[in-house]
Image (tube, rainbow, N blue to C red; front, side, top):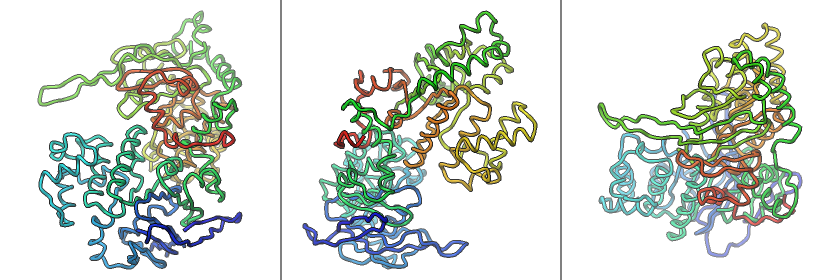
Length: 601
C-alpha cells in the first residue's frame, strides 16, 4: 500500500502487490466507536495500514489522534465501551476485527505481543519480575523454568538476570522496567510486536539503548513492529514506513525519509516543522552550512536590555526589602541574575532501623545565569538538575555553597525577605495537572499569588488576570473553567500565567514542556520566547531533552551524577562537546542520524 495526500487533505490509497508475500497486519477502512454519556463517539474512521513481515511501521500523531486506539483494536484490548463498528483487521490473513475473546487470548503472546507505555502501571507492584515473565511463558505453553525466565530477561539486556528476576518493579530503574516489559512482550517470539510509546517517559540516552536493543531483538526474531509515537523524528529514524493520524483518520503514509522530506498534508507539515528533535537537527545543519536557522528561540539583545532595565527599576525596592546597603545596590544589579557557587546537597538515606548512609545528590556545582537569557541544565534522571532548581527556589536548603540573587546570599534571607524573593523568582513545574489545584477555577488559580502578596483590590486583580490570559493566548472565557476542562497545553499556559502574575524577573522551568505533545510543546516554547522578548525575563530551564535546549537556550550546563561536567554557550556545547557524556547525550537526540538537506532549515 502507498498513500498520497491531495492538497485538500483527502488521503488516496493505492494498493500494490507487495514483494515478500502476505502482510503480517493489514487494517482496512477501520472504524472504532466509543459509547459515552453524550452518545456514540467515532474515535477512528477509515483507518488503513499494512505491515510486511520483518518491517517496522510507525504511527505518529498528537494525543487523541487515534493511534493508540487503533493499536489496541489490533490486539483486542479496547476498553469496555469501545468496539470495532466497521472495517477489517487482518492478522496474518485472518480477520480478527470481531474475533471472540477466546481466539484473541490464543493469539496474544505467540502471534502478537505488546510493550505498553507506562511500565510502572503495567507491571504488578506486588509480584516479582520473574514471576510476571513466568506467567506469560506459562500462559503461552512455553518452558517456564527459572533458567528460561533468566534467559528471557538477559535477552532484553538486563544484567545479572537471575538476581533481577527475584526483585520487584520498584527496585528497577525506569529503563530496567521498560526492558522487563520488552522481555515479556517478546518472550514468546511473536510475529508482530506493538510498541505503544515504549520510551516516552525515559531519558534520551536510555531511550536510544532501549530502541537499539528492541531493534536488534526484533531483527533476530524476524518480528514486525508497530511503533506508536508522537515524535516524528523518532519515527522517521526507527521505522521503514510512517503513518500519520489526525483526528481519528490516516492523513498521510509513506516511506519514512520520503515523508519527512516531502510532507504533503498540512498536519504532517506542521509535525515536521515543529518537532523539537527535527528542529534541533535543522538548526545544526543550517549552522554547519553557514545559514541562520529560523527555529532558534534564544534571547535577543533587546530582551537582555529590558531585563537590565527591569532589574534597575526594582533595585531600590530590593535593597530596602533585602537589607542591601544603598551603596552596594548599583553593584548588586549586574549582568548576572543568579550566581551559584559550590552548591552541594547531601541527603541522609535510611538503610535500616537506626542506620543510614549519606547520598550526595548535588556535588560542588557552580554556574551563572545571565540576565535576560536562558540557561539550561541538562542531564539524565538522577543527575541532580531538579535538586539544583529546588535549592534555587529555596524549596530545599543547600548542605553547603551559595546562591546569590542580585548580590544577596539567599540562605541569609529571613522570612519577610524570602517572601519578597519569591515574588521575583517563580517556578513552572513539569506536570500542569498536578501543580494546579483541581478545586480552583482558572481565575482563582491565577489570582492566588496576587492575593497572597496583597497586590491590588478585587477589580484590579481581575483586570490583571484578564491581561495574563491575553499574554498566554487563552480566551478570557477560560476564567470560569477548571483544570480538568482544559487540554495539557492549555493547563501549562495557565501555569505560565500564574508564574507571570507577580511580574517576576527569573522563572525556573522544571521540565516545563516534557509532558506535552510535540505541537503543543512547540507552542509553549514559542510562547516562552515571546514573553522573554516582551518582558525581559530570565529563564533557568531544567530538562533532559537536548533538542529543546538547542532551540531555546543561550547557555548550557551539563550534569552527570550530581556534578557539573560541562558548561558553555549552546553553540559551543553542541558544536564541540568536550566530554564523552555530553557527546552521548547529543548522539541520542531522536532524528540525529537523519540526513537532511541544508535547505530544510
